Length: 505
Image (cartoon, rainbow, N blue to C red):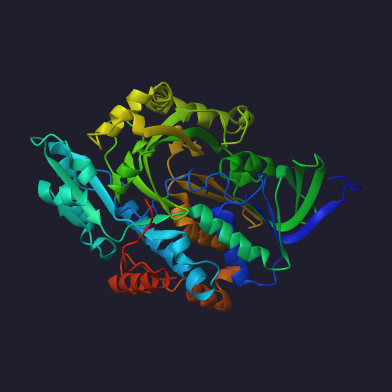
């Protein structure tokens, strides 16, 4: 930054992006260290317009109750449970923090953003039934999944899922698991409520229409950011001691501009998302569940299909998908040049290598993009046999950028999760990747705090406050059943999750 340039904002913390991640980190920091001054820079006109928007993400409250891609079957027939247990625990952690925000801080009513919607896994065919049975037996051992119910009885499954079972071939083996503890979460509403809370502080400033273009390290150790104001078209400058890049698909290009050594070799593979949205209110009324199936052999983890009850603005909606598509955009409202601009000398080889090792994924995405409406309806018919094509319309969801990182053996590998990349000195952190994302935002932001504020995180003051906000902090729900039971009792009360949610069809 040139000396003649005027710094518009100077603060302790800058959060890039006004999504669920920045909102969570901002509230955590303000609760832990009220003296911190915070600036938020968002390129759109309001919070939660991209990935955190209710229509742009899965909204399941990813808790691994029903998502079969989190429990892969090994060659010997055993089931991997580590990822499912981790995600289930992380979601309970998120619920604890949300319970603190609603029950203690009173920043919003729980009924505005979280509702009880049971989670189901549903499969058909002998091999898939065998898989689901083994998955149930492997997870049932843990308190996190103690309430999981399994059935191969057609009458029982029909009572659970009438829309899914009506008109189905009676000769075909079927099985399902049910988790009554499942939820639906409107992350857009939650995010906006957290930003309203942050903006109630005089030393927190949220600036919309600010498109961050560059960031560089100054000699004094602070970060200088340059942004373009989309409304005035003026270049503006900002300074902070700590920067968090939580810009969804826009995080990678900004991380690359930081030039921190830890960012070397990271790339991104963009994927667009689409849903089929039901327009028939009578059909919507007949289904109240999140039903996840098993992805076809050879399909990527992101392709796990689900027939999904959503509750948006107090109204039931029904979606099916996701359908993927090939794109070069990193954001829904981004540029088709995003992928090309992300290429750098240190990530070209990892990206090419990952591409060579994931040719089936590319083929899959191209095939998805070329599907007709009837092709998509045919996929839905496997979950809703009596579907009528005219009842459904295609809607575009959010963009996802899957992480590509260096690998000594493969050259580059494609990751289907989230990745925190932090500078060694803790002055900058960025979040890359997608699912499970929002549902595990609290645990991910605790990781950011551990990486970037290690001394504070080890202090009694912060530990005590974290315990107040997240009662299970420092303990394991997976290894200690009583911690899990206590956590769920508390969040059930604070989030009012003890009764069946009543919503309008």
